[in-house]
Length: 593
Image (tube, rainbow, N blue to C red; front, top):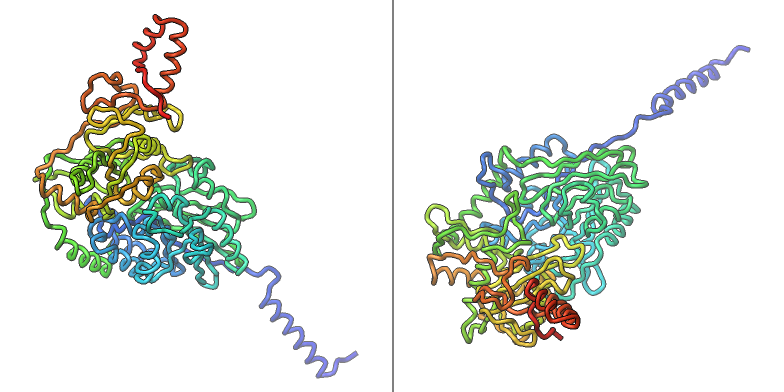
């Protein structure tokens, strides 16, 4: 049958439309793919200036230059930090309350940062007020609570090339012991894994294709098995983070690692990255998002060295330096030799060993508070985390205000308290930190005249074998005037016993002003290098005539064990008891209650 012209036109038109439809929506459309770049750093601590190495490493201007370059390669870029941007800063930033550092972070268009423990150095009110007012980016703390409610923003979301990207920020649960408790009254730091998972689930439910956890917690280990060790606080985060979290950018331990782990239900391996410290490295995450789902993440730590500096940031740093130099160039005294912190084999700081600098600062604070009316101190203690640089002699031995500020940047108040001998022993026992702490042992600097013997292999609570003050055994029931900074006086660094001090007095000086006054009055200065903490295997016999360096009679722990041992031996026979008493250098004493 012959078709009519209209029917023939309709058939032809329909066929054409079908063909066009087939061309517009093929049976297997090419997947929509977006490449997103996240650039991150951690523990910057106001390091605005590059090192003096050749070529220079780090520094705000080089870091900004590298970010500029990588942004040019991929406009789909977000810049993030895992916290401790400020606090424990060098003189150039610290003397201006870290305002230049916050200006630098604004200049690089930082998108978001987790809050670090050092953001709380001047208290929560300072963070929530002055710091947040100066920052053009949000500080996240999903596990920071006040009055039962979140105290800070929990998350941040930004859409990049049609892809919704979410960030969750958490801070180490140890923060309460790392900053002055007085400044965080009413603030609670909850379990970071639980809070991160809670917020990540919310972000995914709201359509985020990619969720990144900015965790101000980290691993001391740098191998990937150690990073994921569930016996550590950070390992619990790595293993406990839900499949809603695609990547973790970490901080706090100043380590460098780049690991990835399979996660059930995630569809790709989860990257866990930390980029050292002080802007020497920039973490780079290259993320592939296909049809609204993350399908791959590649990561590396890029050295910040040999980079063309950003001119605007270089000008910012130069201005900050000029302002700081006006104060910093003031000479306050001289030293005859280097006064340094304890070091690891690779030259990095070791907070778990006795240091000349730690003992020297304790000496300074004791001397400045020993007089009646100034506290009447008999002993002083100094926490290793409060020492942020070494005092180096250089060519002429001159020490400036800036040198001293670099050593003690926190400007903690000094307080003298009354402690019992038993409380002093408890404080020394607390150098062995709670299980799972990032640093398992923190060695206190102690002032001259005080010394002690320790046994690291003894049971917890029994590691301090004996203590003396000027050659006389510390009386557990006696009372002693002890000078400590306000951080320790509030129980910081888990030294709860020091927070129990009574009859507090202060001169109104902080640690830096006292250090300056000491240099002005006593230069040139030669620090005492003698050990004040003696391993039990190296100790002389108790009461053996060591003078001021003799740790004296046992107080508890090993002493009690010695009494029991000798008592049993006496039951067997006086000759055997005498033999073991001589061989083991055991001295009979009254056990502590």
